[in-house]
Image (cartoon, rainbow, N blue to C red; front, side, top):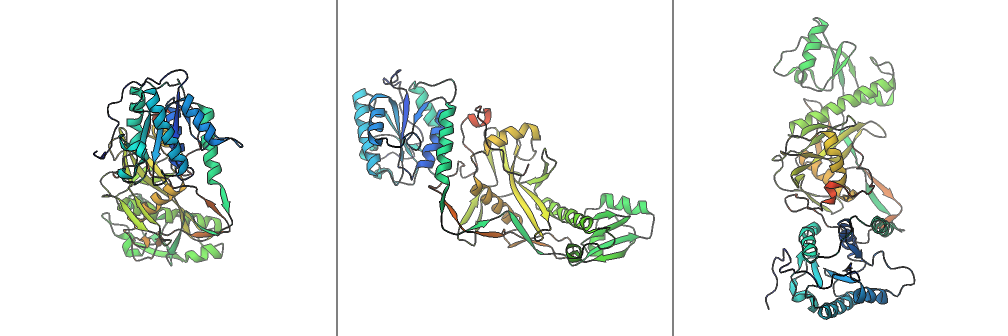
Length: 479
């Protein structure tokens, strides 16, 4: 018998004779706890679509005889059995459920009672016997790839649906996921922050004056493309005089008036011409932000203003070829795309840099998202906000971390530090964040696969664009 190859969709689905008022539940058979993450993910998607779902990551109560519960479900309530096939599929409990489901399907005359979904890199010849004759939906390496054909299969089989999602069931899934993730171990762990230290600071902040009229200096600064300060009729810059004055528009004759060491502003408080240390620090932060913005613009990123007024820089289509790959010091490898497709829109990674001088000179860098229709022009903030929240609500910290590191690595051209200098000054930002030792760690009960294709296309259910009436966590801090 030929082995299914590709298995992109169910074939020959027909209305099921089992769909009745008694049988209206979909049971998800999976290895527990190894495949809990994908089981919860799928249960949430099916429930949002209106189906009644039973999955033992949250349904079994303390004291339940779990096999008796599952057997009762299969014999009397289940209209379809979804089998998640991974390298753990031959666990004893999974094989028992499949054997019973195979018998129930024959008894009901439904040769598609069991719907296999391949969620791991397991050869089809290693499927349990009950599944070998069935076409399997493909959910490896992207879970969401199996969702559209699965929903189509259930619709074709006339599986009963509710008019709205079971919000209580969804809440219990979220609770089960949180309880699974919050297993504290007495084992130290090194945490990565989003604080990227400035490894080289300019030695001098120079304030230049002009021998001509003050309006000449102001007019020139209005068109100056170099990071600068306008303060007390003077022009301040980290940049040397020659580099500062370079450009298409000739400047008025400049001469140095004040030479300040930025380190003195950080340590000594009042430094002329600033009236106090707070004002000096504010001006240094302003100048650092301008250097960041110029570096992003020069690398081809595009500017976007969020509703909060903060400026982000996003990767337009065509700027980055393929995936960005980076090996971390811990041995972990980052492999991400920084833009992709979502329905009729394009999503783009955006970086937001916030310079800070305490506790050390650094940038707090956040990853966020921008949406476009043409790959280059960001949608207005209000139009984008709701979609962005729904689209990224399943993106956990590890995904944001990898996107952030991938984006910074590309901007820095693979170097260990991003050069923010304009002229002869030295200003570099490490692309490796500060680390914090922590006395305990959390045990993640399972891995989570991406919902993106190799080209960055995000394949999610319709509920993520239309909304599902459920309150969710706010989007990651950055907007």
